[in-house]
Image (cartoon, rainbow over the protein chains, first blue to last red):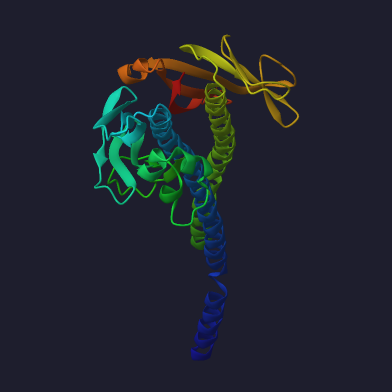
Length: 195
Length: 154
């Protein structure tokens, strides 16, 4: 009796040792499928981020070029330059640092920095309907006074900085978000105009 | 028996979850492809207007289709929904409708901006919006993307 019970018990233990494989396979397969699923979600999320980055980059770029077009217009019309006469009656050109310009139907106040040698520089940063901009516009007094030097200057030579070689330099940064925004999707593009 | 039921349940949950994501992933992939194309078409619309402005053309307010000028000079012209055609690898305007119609259409809107200083110099400031609309298959709504820039026309 005791021996029969012992045999029955051993057979039950062996049977139990063989069970549990279906559950194990199920968990393993589930893990594999879950990993594939998570990888798929990851790829799609990255694609969405990349596409939004492209879109935001274009918005930032056109914000920068809009402001650069505005600065180019005033620069080309010599808005900041006036002609006066010296003691001999000869016409000379000097810089007239106007307080503001008008872009996209609104006044843009200019903060002129103290003259640094021959360079007069104005800055402004403001929010835009589709983001923000931050520009630096510089006029080289030396070249304004001396048109001969302007004609022969090598504006595109970046030695000593463009501001020392060009008559005017506009560097505009455009962003797709308002100023001070710490959004990780923030993109900043720069548009430069040299004369 | 119980073990098998538990295993089947776990498998069903694990398989149905990711499988239900597949149609979404495929739809998003198509959407992204279309959005990238629309992105460049909208960009091209603005660049054509900037090019014409820099070339000294007079720009007047209104809605325009854009001929990017694959075979000639880029130009703006008036006309309806401005569908885009695909000829080989090149997207064409309805002005030279070669190839097959696409799901895209592009309208450039030029509107005046009040700028008295520009007026004093005989110039006008213009707001330029390039908008591309594309139709999605199935029940998805039409999508659009637009970029804006400002130019001085003189």
